[in-house]
Length: 483
Image 1 (spheres, rainbow, N blue to C red):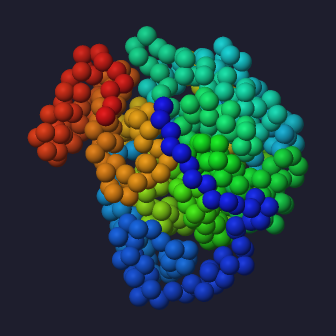
Image 2: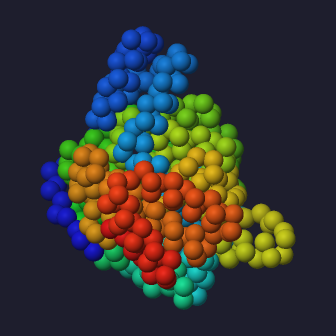
Image 3: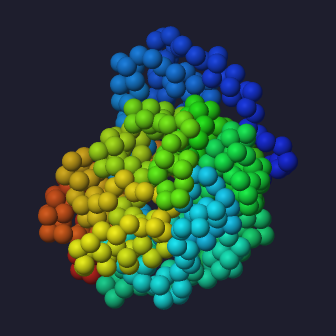
């Protein structure tokens, strides 16, 4: 797998680049924006050059519903311009819920003594991977509780097991992204040896007083160590990273502006911003009172605006939506800029095996080892069928950019020139065809093949011919074809 040298600028990990007084002043200065101010920002956003914090603050505080509708239209336009109508699919694989931190919003908290703790053994991990592969997944997010037993060496061993687990029909995981505790530069270098994709870690809240109040003990209490996790990952040579905030812990305006400041700081210090941004909302978690009553609850209308504004502010960054959200809202958010979604997810170690047993026994037992409650319980095939039939979206299982070295600043350079469609759209069609042939229901296969044909006729004769050749090879049994 190809890599790119990362030109790091000197940075001081002992000083926060999040300046609360500056962010709060930006919010205050943009309060009660005029329609003309909002309109000017929306017009600038259409250039696909991103937004400043000041411009983002104006959109966050718009009070005109008609301009919100225009915001949504611009977000959809930008998403289609850069990413097209493809939606990347993945699923989380929880490998361990052992955790040494006490976080008041999380079901994995060390203080939650009712939680059933589990770290997957080798055979259990293989079984979970097999189930995911038989669902059709090619890309997963390996999730590890923040505990000393989940050290870099152990994670590398488990990731290699995931890559090595393959099915007779060609089913395999081709990209393992990782969500784990922040590591040192040397530990990140060890993690990189496992050929991981994106390293993902959320700050949870960028408001330091709130951060200190909800993280009660454990290494996670160190705000600055977590804040600079992406800098250390980049320094270690991991050039695709994903950031996020847990909305509901503090004022959503402060959190979103801080997320964007984080992206800007990475661009300045590391030469490239985050590959992805996630924006989970607090959901009920077994053993957590705070998650039942978020201090700053974000309703659906506000959440839609957050997603749309993020798409305008960082047009070339992937936006990830988890199965915390319900089917109806997930469908709406796909229209507003989301480019990656999880499907068929479970949020506990061994959750996929347990889910299969429940289906066989026709029962629904409470998952008392989950990190949080799910909002979308549909199967992978049900989600894909809706993507195809309701929104003409192309489910993509492509991992070609990662394996061709189109990562980090290389990927962003291509995206900013709007060349990604040249690679991603064909690869989306080819990998979707693979899914249809190997895993889908008859109804999804019929609808999916019709959508592929509909997409092909939009292309030039030369590109159409090349893709049809690849699709024919797929029909003849070849797998893992990508440009």
